[in-house]
Every structure is written in C-alpha cells, then in structure tokens.
Length: 277
Image (cartoon, rainbow, N blue to C red; front, side, top):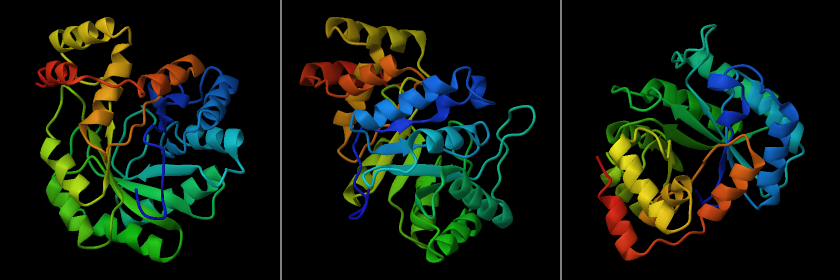
C-alpha cells in the first residue's frame, strides 16, 4: 500500500464475524476467534474491519483473538457510517462523528494509532456523488495528530478520489468490483499507475444467474470453487488489487487462500472477461 506499509495481497475481511446481517454478536464467538487466529497462521497480514460491524462486535473480537498484534499485521478500518436500531447503515460524516469513530476504533482494537482509515462515502455498492472535502479533512487532521498512519477511501468516484488527493495522500481505494461488475476498470488502471492499492469488495456480488453459470462452468473445469476462480481473476486483473474475502469458517478461509494461488490461463481469462455485464 505504501513504502512503510506492506501487506499480503490476500487479506481477510472481518465483516462476517458479527451476527446475521452484520448485526449483533456471532452465534459462536470461539469460532470467530479461531478464524482470525488461523488467518494470521496462514500468513495473512491484512485484516479489514470497521467499528460499525456489529456495531463494535467485530473489533472487539479482533482484539480478543490477536492482541497484542504481531508487527507484521496491519488492520484497516472504515469510518463514515453507523448502525441504527433497525440494522440500517446511515451515513456518519459530521466532524464530531468521524472523530468519535476513530477514537472508538482505537479503543475497541486496543491501538494507539490506526494503520489505515478509509473514509466510507457511498452506500453498500455505489458511491454518493458530491464533495468529500470536509470529512476527509477531518481524517487528515487526525493523521496529523498521529492517530492515523495512512488514509484511504471507500465507495467513491474518481472525482472524489482526486479531491481527497488534493488534501492528503491516499494509499488505497475500496470499491464494489468483480468479474461481472467492472465499472471501475479505468479507475483501477489509473490507481495502479500511481501505486495506490485497489481493494474490491463483494467478489461474487451482483451476478445474474447466467453470469453465475458461466463462472461455475469455468470453476468446474478447473476443479475449483467459483469463489476461488473469482479471487484468482481479481489477482490477475491488476497488480495493485488486494483481496479481503470474508468468512466465519476456518475451512472456507483455507479454501480462499488456496484459491488465490490458482493461475488462470489466457483462454480462461478471456472466457471470464465475457462475464462482464
């Protein structure tokens, strides 16, 4: 991500460690702890989280499982949203909300400074247009205060990225992207040229039944799972792509790590590229 921040391209997304619909505690807290410890044992050095997962639950489990953290482990979190009593995800971009969110992340993770904080701007799968200067400036100030080491963005447009970069450097962008949903193709290439990491979420999200069938067909021929093929395609799409697939199962975690080692042939990449909507 940056000269002083090196992570494995295969990371782990902690969203699914919370309860159903990312709300409340998990059914099996010990299993959640085991998944995190297995991720580190497998060599993963990049964990993606947010204090509004649960809320607070995921970060508390990360602290329970892994604190004190190994020097090689980097935790990336997000601010800019909350969870209400109905489980919705309202924006929380006011200066006082952002500052409190950073302090909450520090407290629940047991850290003095956060490795990376992403400003989450849009909804679950699409950006919300408009200026992000005010909220991003708040995070830049917290960075100057030493509470944040690096800044990133989540669910944003190219214009919002450029606006943020006029305020402070960014090390990563986290947007919705996969084989079937490729609106960010040009953006990925632009960020790669700037050595900025691109972190796609929902690697199997938004697929039509026909697109799923095509992916499943390739996976069957390779004796692999659709998720493994989708992750392998992302890794081969661009060298600046980092992955954060989530799971609450140790077995699925191992499958994801193994799948990321899959190398797709030129013909397989061509076939998979035809899946794009």
